[in-house]
Length: 432
Image 1: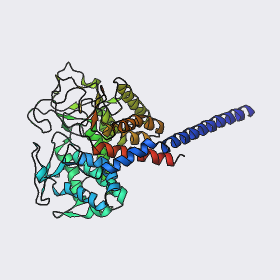
Image 2: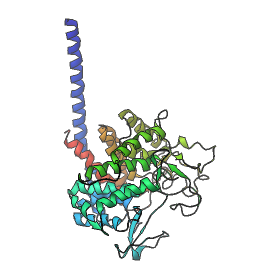
Image 3: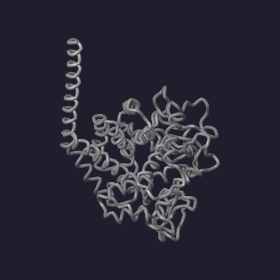
Image 4: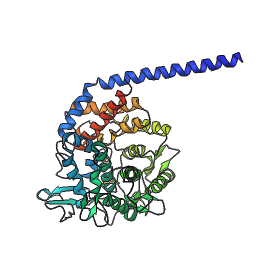
């Protein structure tokens, strides 16, 4: 009996020592975070840039996929009524079938080759929808959740627009996906073939619009975004509101089908596409070798993975970044699609293995959700350092040269970094 008592004491002592060591490690990291002046500097710069709502200096439009990622920062820079007004614009120009546009722009600035739509509910403004993508509806629902979380203003759900409440319009947007962008066979969201979270098709022509060359597919990004939107909708939905579907069940089935059809358990990664009517690429091209980083991050945020899988996904992202001299985990895909197969976006440019902090920065919250604070800090710091070095928030970076590219004042990046730093500081303040 004494022998077992001694063994128990040893086990308890080891457990206590490990806990003590972890506490000290957390305190040290918390101190590092709270005393890192670069984090404070980047946050301050972000708030300054978020004085506007358009995507950046190269864009006149307010894009919902971008706005969704900087709305929390916007609420620091603007009165909530201004932010609310921008959100409601997307409902004022919502399609009759419930679809949500990508961007809204003042009529006098609507000078890009989009197929613009108009609405009597939104005079002086135009809107457009990139029909190859399926994240607009999900992005708006997520943005509504963030607005309510920050402001506590649930009255936005009762706003009447064209004789319909906002809450009913939100559900109409979700129903649009179930009706127009849904595979009954797989029980998953569909979209055109693009690169990861991107909105450009492979072949020449106007790559953002569905056309005769479109190949329909299922990917992890669209489905993870929809899963988060369903979770958010069920969170803020008034208890008295009667839904048209059992969205909780749909969300549960979605996760099951993601795991069944999109997660490659052997490779411990998500496959790029599950094709519905054939691939746009030749059989000789092994697309499954490509790592989709952005969609993987959103999948983790959606809660699709175990902690062990999250560690492995992060390891793979870091390993891919290590293969290029100036890459972070924000590198969109790796390896890039060859130019002969993706003529619309050349290798190592834009969405084809360009480096986007806009997505890489979201890994901070994803890792923190799984208790991986040290990994979150380590992954984020190269992006913080790059922002300081370049004195601004750039749309994307060349992983071979390190050169900043695209919009020089990209609010998506500013918003993601603002939130990532806030999340780190929140963690640090509870562990200091």
